[in-house]
Length: 480
Ligand code: GLC
Image: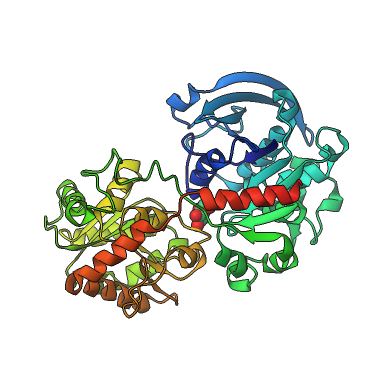
């Protein structure tokens, strides 16, 4: 039996700010339990909902040095769907109303978490063969494993995997401070190891020292070897390309299932969506105060409102798009300029646009179920999960051909009658508008073809199984 430990800064259902939490929460239960014991370790944040804190049970505590500091480490445990989750407790580091705040605090917080996660293992009697790290917050773990921990019998043979969910966030701060925080010798702070120019970089450390590196789609694995997507680490990605694989994410097919979803107005399946799906549109129109018309082409967005998601393109063509027979529903929060942009257009085209500047799981499910199309014109997208949810609900994705969007949405080909969505190549607002209007036209004038796209979208399979198998293969290759 192989033992795997996932280490991450967020995990569903306990705490979530983005897709990372979905992946870390849903992938572990998809491994064959006869061969793999996969557990998860994450921080216990003060901002977690009480119901989740109540699920945790105290296991042990100890004191740990971190550079010259000496800190309390509590260890808690919860078991959910047959998966064991450990939580690191420290009320100083994990206070506040959000998991992340200022980067200068976060670098110390996650140096602490990374060292504490490793240090807790002998005490909870779990000795993983592989420590699987996710994103910059855990980038120091492969470094620690090659450094101090290497001397201890317990850690010597432990392998590490670094998974990049988003190369843009690297955990960067000046190297003197990081040296002081981590207590790592100065020999680590050179350009071939942890630093980029004069800054220490956690993710870089993870990529340099991990035994294998993965990212969340094949296309993104190629893109990050180029300067445009490489975020200054493209040279390193090329240097490590033999250890780098792209494994596309899946989604939880139980949780996202239009046949059983408790959040939506009317359940439906691949067989009866032609009759039943639009009841969800009408429900949404009523709830959000839009014109009630089950025939109206409705486009949805559920997203963090950041430049990554291509919101600039949408802002640019919104006035033009609103001349068409469409409705537009937005759910999400993020940068203030984007929140206000959507509020403005909601005011200007009140019966067409509904800007919901908050995050709600229930509302997001209603959008996946109720809309005809789902727009995701990302500037870059390591994988993207909402387009997978849209496919599952027969809501046709309109995406830019980048990263995971390119790998998971097959563009409609009207001559061959293939494809599960619509896509465009360049980061150009009018190229996007052209594709949206093409989708509109197929929807209004060629309904049978549109419904065939929906058929194919709902038949696509992005459950975790095949991706979990690819991870399993990699684990077997690392630890034969
Ligand atoms: C990040 C990426 C997103 C990916 C998710 C999970 O949020 O931006 O593309 O789907 O991580 O891997």
